[in-house]
Structure formats: structure tokens, C-alpha cells
Length: 316
Image (cartoon, rainbow, N blue to C red; front, side, top):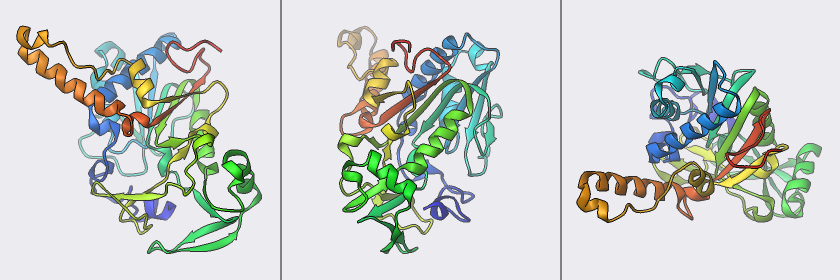
């Protein structure tokens, strides 16, 4: 999985490619409302931090920098002037990207602000277990049984996967995602770290796993040949540290002012142009918060040195 995604000629690092947006649709690509919501969250973090002179915004798995560009555009100039935006990405810097955006291979150490990871953890490579053994996969996608699970992976399954997942059935071992997320959170000196992803919790793990592929907007078999995305949902509850809050995207965006409510019909006669714009915005908000779709994504919010994990949440 690591070689297929990030090795020479890998899906995410091959030069000249369209980037993730050419193969699948994320919330970032669905609507500018998403970047606007992240901008509002950044303002809240800024206030919690006491409006520091330098406010870091770190985008993990930044794609082509679309989210950072959208957030900078949504901020008022005086706040944007204090923001230090970092795109953490293995691919080459795209041509024409806003020069304010720093293109880096790892999150900056000692950051103060908001670290945001939209659909990053689902592409952190992981091991698959079946009947107590690792699953091996050939470049053509053919699977075969490997050796027995080591102690650390078995312990993770016993703690986080119903029934232990180690002796019977298939399970996705999220230990690598836990470690990747812990490393990202540790880079923050103060602020908030947010991971947004396809996810599940211990009481609703998928019995047959979620490993799949995407190419050109279509779901395809997860063949690790570099020609498609290879992804699996994230056990976000196992990633959570002390004080973390887990929300659905529907809950998170509602709290950040994104509403799919239709505008009042009276506006259609009073200001037809404004009505059409409001109606379009409501449609985009509905897609971002839809049940059975993007609204079911999970947001893991981890505070670091601030009072709460979410606007309006109790301090603690």
C-alpha cells in the first residue's frame, strides 16, 4: 500500500497528475462552504490562543493546496496576514500555488494554531489481518495468507476490534494510523488538531473491512499497482487522546454555521438574485451534511493546551 501510494510512480506522488481531485470528490472540492467553515474554526482557535502574532494553519495531506487557498480567501485580511499556512504533502508543489503557502514534507514542529487533516488518515498504509495472520497482496491485487500477527498488532486488535479480530474473520489494524495521528498532534505546541475521515468506532466496526480503490471517480478493486487510490476507513476512536471530541460532519458543520435550510420564499420576489445564490448555497450545504454521504464523516478534534476541543464545549 505504501509503495502503491507513495513509492516511485505512486498514485499520490507521480508528477503532472491531476491530484486527488481528478479521482474522487472530497468535501473540499464539493463546496467553498467547507473552507469557510474551517476558516471559522481557525478564528475560534485564534481567540482561544489569545490572538498570537503568528497563527499556524497546517493542512495534512494537502492535495494541491485547495483547502488552504480557500481558507485564506475566506479570512478577513488582517487575520490572513497573521496566518502561516503549511501544506504537508509528499507530491511536488503545484505550479501557481499561492506563494504564502509553505510546501513541506512534515508538519512544522512547535506550531501554534490549527492542524487539519481532511481525508489523510485513510491513506496512511495499514496491515490487514485474517484468521490471525497478516494478509499479503501481490501487485495484481491477489491476496494470500502471511505470517502470524506480531504482539503489538495483536494487542491493538484485542483492544479495539470486536472479538479481538485476531483469530477469526478479517480486520484492519489501525495501529499505524494511531501512530501517524499521534505524531501530527505532537507537532502542535498549542492549538487544535482535527482529523476528518471516513471512520468507524468499536461498536460499529465493518465485519469484512473497508479496503477499496478509487480511480477517475469510480470505485475499483484495491490493486496496489500505483494506478488507483488504495484506502480504508479509519478507527478514529483508537486515535483519540485525552480531551478529544468525536463528531459527525453533520454536527461539526452545523456548529460552524453551515446550514442546508432553504431560504425564505419571500426573498425570491424581494431579491431574486440573492434567492438563487442562497438556494445554491443551501444545496451545497445539504451535500456536505447529507446522511449516508459526506455528513456521516467523523471529525476527531484534539485540543493541545487550550480549554476545549470544540466551540461551545465545556472546558476540561
